[in-house]
Length: 93
Image (tube, rainbow, N blue to C red):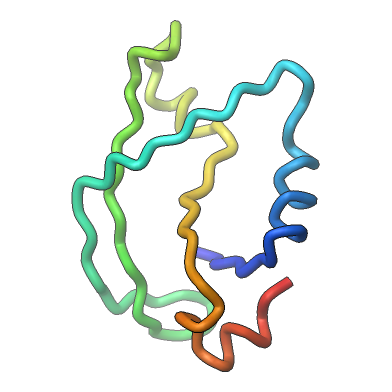
């Protein structure tokens, strides 16, 4: 469960690598539930926001769950620098 922190320019460079000419990006802000949970990762036990969001399946011709699960997808959250911890600020790419 990696969490990446990007500056605006670094994020745009990162995402451009995955955008081919015929790529369409599906964006949803339909967040259904948010919880704070302790979870174990390779870095040990940490706090995570567990977020459930929905994306309309009606926009796709094929509604196969396994096929959708294989798609390149990220949850993106926009925050101001002053909302991040000092440790997080050091990790910004």
